[in-house]
Length: 450
Image (cartoon, rainbow, N blue to C red; front, side, top):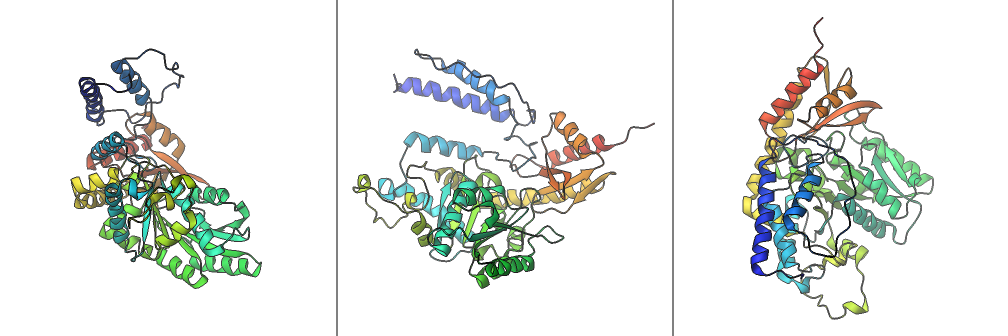
């Protein structure tokens, strides 16, 4: 029976809710990492199973992982998953509305569109701007590269060139490859001593490529590099793009939400001049994985690059005055992603997000200062809430910290050297957690007495 009665639905919902409450309540003391053995479970049986047994199996499997929802996950970019967004997803999946074409659920599309409009306003984008929620910045970047190509090159031109730095996220190279550009069409611009794009060097490369018969069309500015959190000089990059007629895309997958804060706005100065912005609310807006957004300066260009039609769609009304999201991205069928953003923003209020982001900036600053005071630790330049540092034996230090089970950190390479990396971003991470990780690093780097 695929449609359970009300009594069964209530029983199932209570069981799942109890599971979630137990899980959430245990996050403060849960190990930061508990890798297990991946054993393939048996295939589904013909007869019905018991929910309690299935929840137990799921819980066991979920426990054998890096605890990305916990306060001591300081690697990569946390996605804590606000409880309010969990409720929103439950509602969205239960109602199961189709929002690829506005006329099939106009009020829900209007709800989702209102959040997009609010985001455009926060980034100071002009009238005519718009966007679409995606599964993440990788898909948003793919759509941005495709749109830039269509707008600046017309038909595909293998001589089109793209400008990045060594710190640009690899999803750009992936998007370029998918859209038909070979690796040699991606030009890596040198960075300055602050690890930011050297705009003069970018200008020289563009001039050189034009002389060689290539067609520069896209330049990427990073608003929060994955390794370092560093933000490129976005305003200067925007001016270069304007002079050269290039599409200016900003990868704000990590740093985008800091536009909600005064310090973030100052750091991201110039982002309002972007032609497109990729942003992951599942990073710095504390939402669940699978929540990305692409914002564009001119929504008509995004639509021109993606719109398609078929005879089987002839009964749908396209005159609602709302965007048909199927025309703004590669997906015809898509989840109703807007509710997981709309509900938390309205339920908690935007000020709560601004305050949380300011707290994370404060914690990162405190962490840099405390680490710098540890003998044998070198703190390197970083930005926003990413903190990078080295010790005499960085690899051993990482193994020691992660092996404790209390915290999970990550590493990167800068200048070819192994470098430790901490990102303070989970909404569950607070001052006491930062203090604890500093003490763990201090103990782990201390030389044993002779």
